[in-house]
Length: 284
Image (spheres, rainbow, N blue to C red):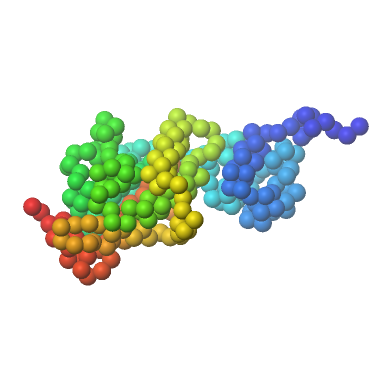
């Protein structure tokens, strides 16, 4: 008689279940994943059903092929019986001193233009003087410890206090919606820790609020373009200020904490905006 699907030789393993969940979340077929990982599709099938056991090298190749963040990469490794290779450490840990130096350098050297350090849910972890003046942030709202509870959130600012400043609010919110959708896909889908569960819930709430603010989509609504640059036009007493902002991610980060951070750098988009923004951000 053929072996039962529930026999030990073919029982679904924790690794097989985790691999299948990640693959489906990425909307990849076994064939697609096999091409990316340079392995036969039959091997992917055997790994998912438990008929084959992965080597450390294969798990790492699959994690790379799936473009997993540090959290899911760790879980995929541990589900296969290997040690995690992406540490989970707070930003203020001694081991994170180098990345804190890099972040401080980015914020400081972007003056007088605004620069923000944002976490996975767009809470403002830190900001330079230009950003604080542009967004009207007090000097003590992005500190460490308990201050994290009251950190302002960039998406909430766009929906609230900053909304009257945005001359192209719909375009900004459409791009924000696209970013939130992409970020939700990147939140760890495995081993839902409390932190990741909270992040997913927070992003879901922000996405719903942005979608509601945009209202029903128009037939003529332009398609969102997947671009690292966001163009914004601000109302000001000096005239319109056109800006562009770019996101700096720490690619290849070997830390779940660092992987969740990004720096938003805002630049004037033309000479007139340069002059007006410098005047607007000048000390009172």
